[in-house]
Image (cartoon, rainbow, N blue to C red):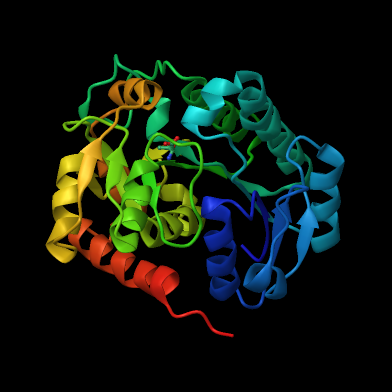
Length: 322
Ligand code: AKB
């Protein structure tokens, strides 16, 4: 992996993954692909090349690949679960139409392709606890439908055309850098902002709503390690269960309260997000990722909470400079 194109480089994962890959491959080129209205700024813009690459525009994708001799694509374009319910056609156009464009171009130009799947690819029929790698996937959301379709299409292109497609099923991702926007697991990011700002947090999900979550540094490492994995050891490709922690809102609140004793939380249910969360697993079994490419998370809830609070305090409470 030398010359990499990130599609969706200014989003929650993309903005951090682009910077991480630029550090990881200093001798290569890591191109930040963005859409109009979401142009890169600051360090992201200054530390490497950027190109307008809309996933629905094949000329833009192919143009960037030729210009920078790209050998690996990270396809991070997607509408997250709650927002996709309001715009199902657009969710399909980006999630499936966009992936199809990436697969075809990867086949033509010999690129490897990473496209994340999600805990959202599972549904109510799936075993909820220790969800196996290979199991029923009948999601009830359009987000989940696009993710299962994406897993199958990516495996098809690997089998039929030899395209090097790989993927992980991301849990809810927690970070202090860029906000998520439109997901069901977003509460687990928002709660830290409220704690640091001294606000009461209104939780949109009921106590007892367990979901897998992961701290961003582990998620970035997973995205890089799966693409570096020895292909002869991979029994699966699209997509691997990965896990690091599972909690409900009350456990997360209690953990933050250990470090912010005055912090208060109330519950104000969002029925859409609650229904989506109820249809997802409580906790995935990631044995296959551990065995096939050595996946191992570094952060648990306590380590993540300490790191989140420390960075958010710096970000939100630092005195303004003139
Ligand atoms: C969402 O909540 O939609 C995402 C996800 C789990 O894929 N964070």
